[in-house]
Amino acid sequence: TRPGRVLIIDLDLQFGQVATHLNVTPRQTIADLVRDEPSQREPELLRTYVTHHPSGLDVLAAPGSPELAELVVPDHVGRVLDTALLAYEAVVVDAGSTLDERSLAVLEAAEVVLVPVYPEISALRAVHVFLDYVNEAGSIGAKANFVLNSMFAKELLKMRDVESGVGARRAEISGYTG
Image 1 (cartoon, rainbow, N blue to C red):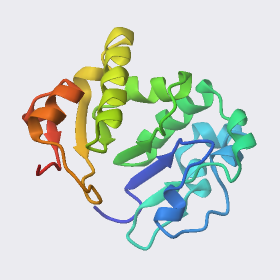
Image 2 (spheres, rainbow, N blue to C red):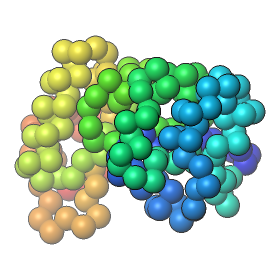
Image 3 (spheres, rainbow, N blue to C red):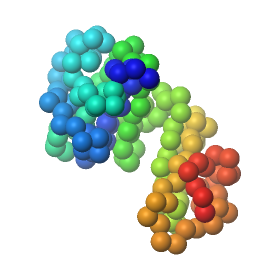
């Protein structure tokens, strides 16, 4: 993909670290963007709030401090997503790990939902509870794909344990070699 065609939005609004993981220092964040309504609606203005990564990826960073998360309300998220989809070929959203109106709106609007999970019993149970909740709340569960992080696992669970804990079959779980 050419530079400026993919945007990642960090909606882990209290403690987002996408910019840190990509080693970029944002001048502005989504908290700044939500204070500028015209930029939430105009693709080229929205692009002025992103930080460019050397790979060509654009980043709309999370606020720099937890108290700024309150500035971003569900209506803002919807407008920003709509405009981002006009400005970019692909939009990736880190929705964080908190279920609220903002994250549920993102999950509902998504074409694909990737759920990273660590192969341990407590993490698998949390994912199972999440899936039960989103399946009752809407169609999110049908879009869910699981990516297991086994990079630092000391004792990996067997695939049958992972399948049982998550409530999914091997075909729905990627990145797992246990």
